[in-house]
Amino acid sequence: MGETVELRLKEIVREVIETRGAWLVEMEVMPDHVHLLVEVDPQYGVHRLTKSIKGRSSRVLRAEFPHLRSRLPTLWTNSYFVATVGGAPLAVIKRYVEQQKSR
Image 1 (cartoon, rainbow, N blue to C red):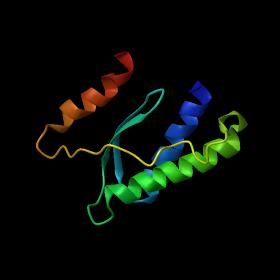
Image 2 (cartoon, helix red, strand yellow; image 1 turned 135 degrees about the horizontal axis):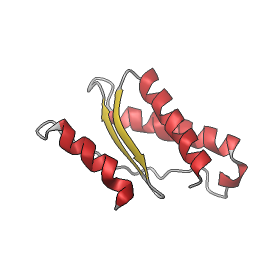
Image 3 (cartoon, rainbow, N blue to C red; image 1 turned 30 degrees about the vertical axis):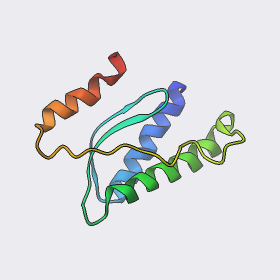
Image 4 (tube, rainbow, N blue to C red; image 1 turned 90 degrees about the vertical axis):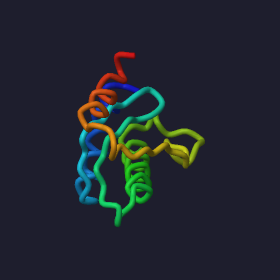
């Protein structure tokens, strides 16, 4: 992923999270996935937040960066992984996400 696309993706993710009333703790963009540490209201649901992030970022990035258009209908798959971190110290999880690019 080009640096410009990565920066724009981060902007979009932040915008979606903010408009949904969630709180972004940490984010790292990898070549084929994104690590997010987000605090989200359980009443809203992580599944709805994920769907919003994927939908908006796919539409906007494909409109702004024509080279991302392909025969595929979207940039993302329907799958995602979620884990709760209620029992782990937030600083430890934040450090894990921050270190992903250096691995």
